[in-house]
Length: 116
Length: 113
Image (cartoon, rainbow over all chains, first blue to last red; front, top):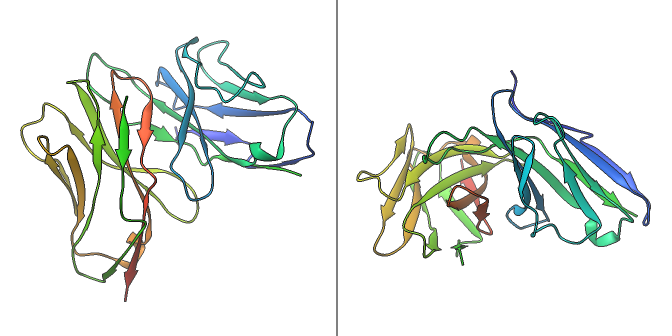
């Protein structure tokens, strides 16, 4: 396994279009996270899954954002009716939750979205 | 509410010297984890080091060490013997209740030859 992968790496779209990003986590990892990172800032948490269950989604930025992880493996993040303010890097991370210890999250290379 | 503060937008260090990157945090949870990540210009986030709130000793990983002062709620990263390849953004992050990770705004480190 070579780590977390994300597709596409870059996406340019016109305002109002829908976009979907894919994340493939490290295979044995049961947790998957989505973050947004704007220029000069740290990653901002959006949502996360444990297996196929979405445990937190209240911090998705608006109802235009949705995420799925249907089989507990890969995940998709969709943004409907994109706006110029959605332009950012979208990062995916995965981790293996074991008991109560804190485990580092491994990040993918990100998808850079540009909304024209 | 959880909060991570990095007060140094940019730092410079001479090659082969040590540098300390500051991080303070705030949480009401007694159990939490503190992390440092490196983000080079290529954009990937690279995990560096982890400190648990109940760990008695400061974490070390090669040239990285974490100066954990629980009473002061600080978790500074110390990089010893800086190398040119250490030039990057560095993010401090905290995870409480094993949920999401909160990140600071980051510090841009530049290593001078």
